[in-house]
Image 1 (cartoon, one colour):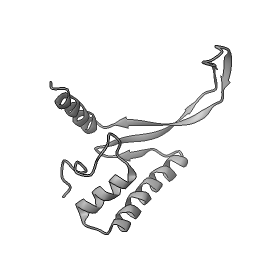
Image 2 (tube, rainbow, N blue to C red):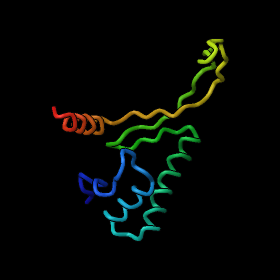
Image 3 (cartoon, rainbow, N blue to C red):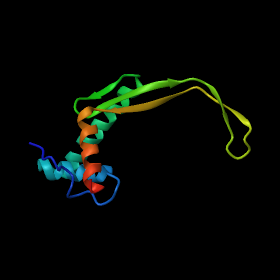
Image 4 (spheres, helix red, strand yellow):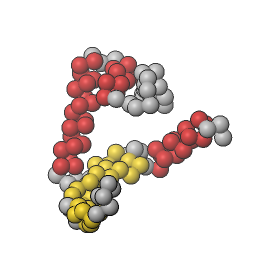
Length: 114
C-alpha cells in the first residue's frame, strides 16, 4: 500500500524530477532501481503516445490530460508591438481531479499558516 506522504523523503527541491520519481518508486516498492526507472519511463511513454494519437489520458483521482487545437490568430511582437501571425497548433491541457485540487489547497493552507 502506498503511503500518503509518498516521496516526501526524497524530494530535495521545489521540483519533482524523474530521478526522484525513480527513487520514490524504488523506496516504496523495493524493486531494483533500474526496474523502477523502466516502469516510470514506460508509463510516461504510454501517456505521450496516447496524446500523440489525440487520445485523452485520464488518471482516476489525479486528472485528465487532453490535446486541444488552437486556431491561427494574430498576436503582437512584444519588442516592436507589431502584429505577428501565430500559426495553428496543438497544445496539451491538464485538468486536475477534485481530489488533487483539495490536497493542493490543503497544502497551501497549511504552508501559509492559515
